[in-house]
Length: 111
Image (cartoon, rainbow, N blue to C red; front, side):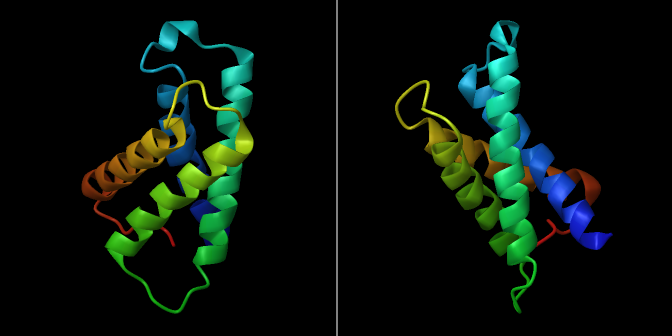
């Protein structure tokens, strides 16, 4: 159950960052393709974070960094970028969302 929670929380972080980056903040242009592409990014990131949860070291900052790194990699693999450096922006956005998540819920990012 803990691994499912890790998958879902990191899916949501990556999915949100991907949707915002793909639309460049204009959520009025959302389409089904955006949802599918963001879902692929979210699933890949969530699965990567589940695998990373088996690492022997745990750190708040490592978890936040890995969310951003895995989101950037997953975004590159999931779809063709809408603008240059989109994957980097998506990864950075995911790191910011992960920090916000950590701050609001006062819990460690699941890794």
